[in-house]
Image 1 (cartoon, rainbow, N blue to C red):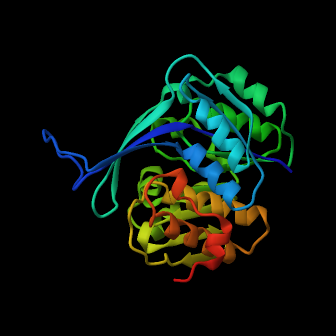
Image 2 (image 1 turned 30 degrees about the vertical axis):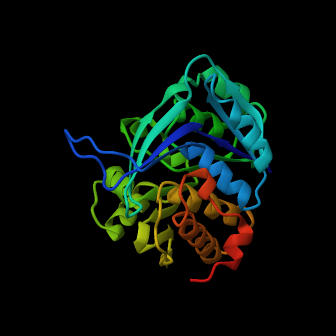
Length: 294
């Protein structure tokens, strides 16, 4: 079984500010950093640091050469990463003094996927392989269709949520991982219980994971439902918390942990991540997670 993450690769420009800038306001930043990120890259990093051998597929612009080196140094296979003409995807991230963030996303190279490139990548995978997807790249509906035809197991984190999600056949997804806001956007419901119920009604065969930030997470499949509390920590930067949770949870399933153990590991990893600045670099190694005590 091979694991493929077909996802975004962004350059993250992070500004530390007293508060998130308001309309018409100009404020000074205390610090600025540029790091490698993107939901796709972050989740590949989390999978690798959780001990999973993962292939990453995605496009970078001409200034994205560092992604190859960092991926290889981190144990992420770069066979299917390609460089295209133009700019990398990038984000402008504000992080306030409480660790909360506000993000502007520019798609760049991530929006240049073609069906031909998708076919070229998926030709190397087969039935029983696993594919992880987010919603920061183009051609996601086509990737889902082609991966399903191949018999691949599809894990989808439909984030950030936008109208393109409506083009995706989510009935072909094996595991759906959404946060509370995305769950509300997907279902029109407003509480965790009604979100989960609506998702089950629409996707009865999918594993459903609803993350609730500091309130924890819910797993649901058929008659099985588990609630996992979050671990209380002092937050510095919440930017990659969801991606860390996703990567470690998927890793737990791939390692055939019980669902409870996978939730605990993912929750601990996310808790550690928010105590550190940055996105991908804040993601802990499994050894750190094993030693974490609430």
